[in-house]
Image 1 (spheres, rainbow, N blue to C red):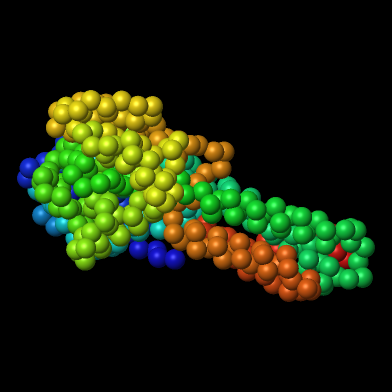
Image 2: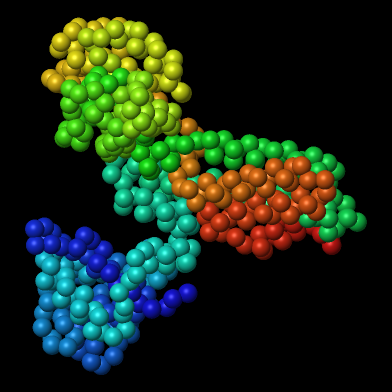
Length: 458
């Protein structure tokens, strides 16, 4: 474990255009209080110092101090300083903070002053969070949640990150490991201590527990809410040529993201824009018009449009009000793979040229934005239905999915194993896979469970 004292700017880097009112510099490591006192008390810097120095403020109490350059004695700024005593800190180490004015010159001078102390180094990306993990302040799922919270662009992404940062996923995976370790302990006891008076029916209890555990993991793997929230819900705009798909994309994006032309077949490839739709992150895709064509390039565009529609979470079918849209709607919804009448949306566009009405449709004029509020409400409702909450926290990362797939497969092998020893080995692999998600893999847990449950050698 690294024992260096590290420092970094904890707020956005100030710029000439946006200097900011306050900048916070954070330090972590055994000599973080030393840095604080040496930057505010030059006499202490020259004579040496310990945390019992009377010039050091009480921990967790902010005081106003001048920040000085240790080489020139020049005052860099005057701001608030505070320090925190280990292990009751975010990283589990000694920590200190300098709250300074947010100008670029102030921040650069303060960072240079810390470097000149000679016993601090600039932190690497993510190093504060890594030290918190290494000191047991959070597990890997909570560490990842911090990154997700920083990167959150919509309100729903923020809520998911807060839920995960609160330990929802950690508790779920730890509960599964507890069940698995207990079952593994029973199997190991049956293998290693055959002469002991062990409870009857161990094999049946273990099989029931493992089948239930595999079912829960399988249901968790099928839940795509978390991954959708992190990456965005994919909505495909489909329909025949010249129905106004690109116009609708531009209307929703509030910019000219796609070329709009009266010439049929203008859109050949998939065009994507990212939106915040009522707090839901959305990847909106404009696709090529669906029709028969002898043009090889247009044929490829139609193939990609159909593939995107099949892979999308939601589909918006856009039809021309001046056409025989009822027949087009029936034909295209029937031929579109994974069309869900309860969730996907039919939009009849160009109602400024020809009126349109019908059950379940949205009448729209992309030219005048008439009907846009109703469309947005339908999209938000469909997104909310797709992301409806459940009691279990959702899976959020590909790393988790990979480990859970490995655990699920190992549990399946354990259930089908012809011998107890083989079942125990596969169960052990499953528990290691679960432990990798949170960063907790401890062999001594198994021994603790064995001797607690079965009083071996009494």
